[in-house]
Length: 535
Image 1 (cartoon, rainbow, N blue to C red):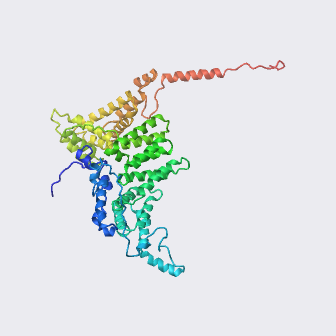
Image 2: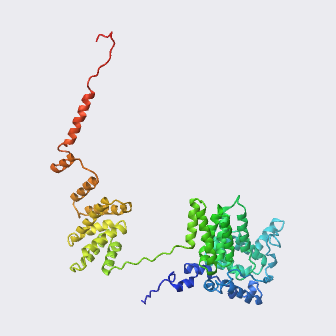
Image 3: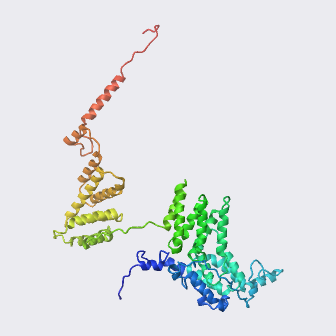
């Protein structure tokens, strides 16, 4: 039903074409979120947006310089060398058209106009309240106060932005009310910052009177001025907000770089947290951008030197290291893949993936193992099977040990070489760990012990081998008394009932010594008496 073609990953970091397409972003989804912003100038007529027809071309040229055209894909690669990453400011402010229908003069903020003028009587107030539900001001308040805080999806935020521009964007007071709402992000809702920034990026392509970046920058520097009674959460929220706006190219990179430099001038207390927050939010974007790479590298080097020079606590040191490696992670060397033969790859698949502790799976795997080229002297099938059986227990699933033991019992009659090799390998592993104890090998030795017990439960080994190994483990690493050694080698220590048949000579000597000490303690002692006593 068709041909399936394999193509290499589009997000391969080693591919030069992928790096050129993704730019400073790590994957296609992130690049699409920050760069593929809808252009309302191309999809809506200027009259609906409240823009004069002769100003549309000026705005398109401005967007071309700042964002790199529609979609923003070219801005990441080609538009980095210029000074237009948010640095271009429109000289002439666009005069919005007056709304002629539906009472556009009532869209003022703070009660100016007729939005909040309800009648004094209760009935007249209720009637006007019902009528005001269809007014633009009521719809604007619903959009800003109810729908916008709940917009946590890319499609939803694009829909709200287009609806605002079409219905309310032509009024300057409505835009001021929107910028105020975008500035006052709900408390503890950091998840909304990327979507609010995307909303601001969509509007910035249409209207050039946004004051959001200026207010956030003033707030960031104003909060850094006072060291007492600082609201840490507000400072971090402002820093993260500016980082998101920088990645959308709404805020110029110099805003974040100035904030980071100010934190480094007094690198202590909450300034460390704010600097790390700035680096985590947009540091990697600025580091991988051409015209900001050098400046950010200098600031990061300064931060690392300050970390070494100052005696910071462990929390701040961990935060600085995390932010630094998030911006500039260490290069990972590609490990050479080990080439294995098709037979080894098939055995690994059978014993690690296909094998389960049930009769059907064990029967299938045992039949496949019996079909291996056992008669070929150049291929040592027994050692290969034993090797991958142990690997399946050490690196596979927990239930693999029981399945391997049952598989060994199934192959005991047809291929006795496999369980014999497996038992020898397990005993050698346990003996090697006893002779070379190391903490990193504890789990591996426990796995070997569990295989040993599962082999006994499956009937592969007798109980005598289990007892011999237990005695060997108990006697290993310390000297055994000669009397106990003679008693255990010359005579039967245990009877059929499990009681000692003959006392050990060393125990008898110890009992005689205890008896002599007890008799010495019981000898009568001389007691002093009075000279008037009858004795």
